[in-house]
Amino acid sequence: MLKGLAIRLGLGIPCLMAMLFLPAGTLAYWRRGSTWRSSLIPMTFALIVLYRKAPELLERRMRVREKETAQRKIISVSLLFLVVFVLPGFDKRFGWSNVPVAVVLVGDLIVLLGYCFILCVFRENQYASRRRGG
Image 1 (cartoon, one colour):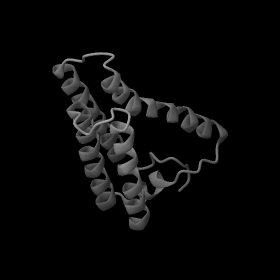
Image 2 (cartoon, rainbow, N blue to C red):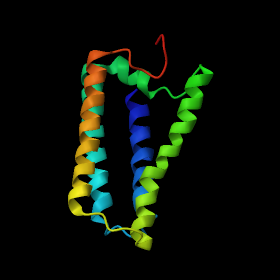
Image 3 (tube, rainbow, N blue to C red):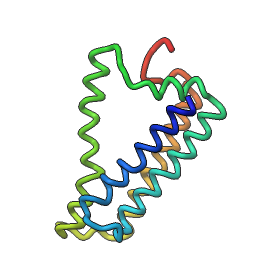
Image 4 (cartoon, rainbow, N blue to C red):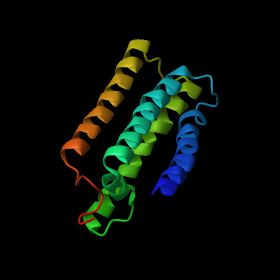
């Protein structure tokens, strides 16, 4: 499991960075960096907690193949949410909007609270995995 986790992080982090910064055309984009930190820090914390406290849950969550057609459809549709990472970079590059700093920080706080909520769900429901039946 540790090898699979390392591979996912090793591939996932550069992919996430590419989605955040390539559309902007610059690394000097603090608002995306803020989003990056509000995602990476809690994700890393969650992985450490799950690895230490609930390795079986983490292993189940890492499985990506779904047996049920409905679940596969939901995952396919959820891939559209990747636009959330890409669109703001294009906004930066083309100057479509000017979002106030306070709004960016509140958004980052909401993301952080979302991760905390997910951890609470996992703590209460050890069977919150992608696949039923282990």
